[in-house]
Length: 318
Image (cartoon, rainbow, N blue to C red; front, side):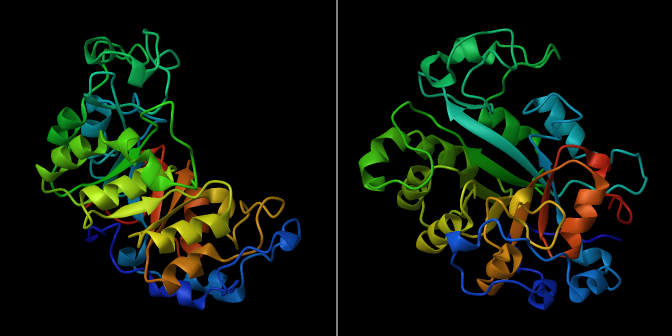
């Protein structure tokens, strides 16, 4: 039987065996150098994993490659065993995106513009809730849900990773010089925290925007948060440390020791080891194949954002 893994549980001890950079800094002069492949320790680690050591399964937007993303139907389907008792892992967590409408409703939607995924037009945070909530997603029959509706759909034993999107045209992505100066632009996060507090799910609030993390810390100092790494490993580690983050969230291209690491953009910093040295789990986006899942598992990644439920075939579904 598989034990459900908490995304915020103690980081895997397997990470301590991995080779890599230990100093937590990204020397830009090293970018472009060829990164080493998996070490002998990494290769050997795959022979010793128990099922409980496997990464947490996170349904990215409710398995966006399989179901109409960020919809109630997707969230309902993603918590069911996709093979009806087969060998796919049950979903441990669901990731969803939130943004406010012009009149303050918190809706679940990824893009800034409605037009790419729906039959409607307009920027979400400039559009009234009535128009946003009636927009049909990908001709699926599903309309844009509120965060409250989404949370009511997700079982209490499934964690929820809330990805905080841009709710204003006046905030800066990534590091900002004056996070307190943006505080009012993130006031809508008070409603997000209120909605989450009404449910028993384990939650993690993550964002590409430092201003969002600053606001969340002021609204609720205890809520688990994470900075989503994007351009720089060094910057991501700095923000993670400054805000006492509960996890590391990074793209596949930043994971050293896998075929997906991009040495032309990143110095060879072992981000898995850096996370585990801090006692933090690391989860990686976005994973689309079983081969990617296995490679990331081999280097000690703790959680995988998956677009397809069948990408993980480890043990029973429960």
